[in-house]
Image: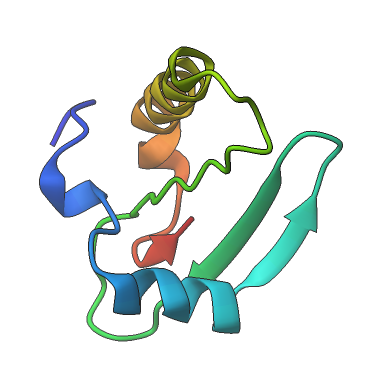
Length: 87
């Protein structure tokens, strides 16, 4: 797979996001919250979904830059995550 961030590496459906939010464990930081859910169904690639509230910044430019940086970090580190890990 290499270091690409493909569509298979994304949480795309509302049900996927809801599952991670309800069943995942939460780690809170000063500026960011991270939910981690280990899917026990047939192992899939690690997946990432990003939600950024307007409370984080009124500027769409700042929110989009944050999302780009998170995607880039995930792209480089996804090979270290267990299969089926959803963030």
